[in-house]
Image 1 (cartoon, rainbow, N blue to C red):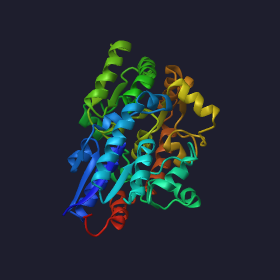
Image 2 (spheres, helix red, strand yellow):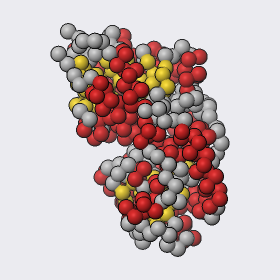
Image 3 (tube, rainbow, N blue to C red):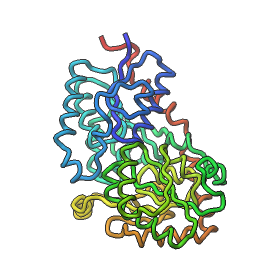
Length: 385
């Protein structure tokens, strides 16, 4: 019989993590079968996805409520399936609001559970650490500062590094990347990353496009490049561009963000995994973010956010190397001024690159192999009867 691993990822960054883990597990144990929810990378790695991953890609308190019925139905369907035919182990890849409840119930049914990527309990809604402790037999942590916090709260955790750090190397010379993209070597280049979710593009896209328009007016010959994860997000962003700035020349890249980042002088990005990618490549960034107004004010009133920065690059650095503009401050004018401040300061850009290179070296651990070794230690020797 074949060992079965249930696994769920909810967004493109989780799809990357999950796919790396699947490849490493399959290399060590070719007899493992994977099923759950995943994106194109996990499916290509051999995961049977019972629902489209896009169904789970919802951000913000209010936005989740709007899709709650469908999310609960999907989780209930997975739980029913795996109670009837239990997998040998379950891995929840990030998506704590979806995965932790599923993990807790599967663990109660005697199924070992792993949560891959610690929820940001050290930053946002710290009370979730109790839920994490009840849900997961093991947490795979991808940032070095998380271990002490989790251990202090009785959570079994293992630091495995970040897989993107293994995959993405610093790039000092933008020339080769520009040549691949057909961009001039000597023109200023701004990479614009408005997020991987449709809700992010709707919330942030107009401000980013407005900022790009202002920057194009200040810097003749400025080239704009945007990588988007799929045709759906590309279509949504292209529609906004046609509405708000149809005269702007804009290059779209149908690939991961790190295909475009090396070509850029500066990156304008939503908060999220993209800020880590910018750090790893070594590109100065400006960060903008906006969520539903009720989500934002609920978080502020309840003091749910406990960290000084929203961008992971700034959290790792312990300083605001990437200027952040959140909610009402995320305006075209503010973003454009911050981008200009970096474009006009080559020495500052070099200082930021040097600091990012230093930080990146501590994240390289051959993460997928480390994570697979931890998962294999929890798997039974033989499949369930």
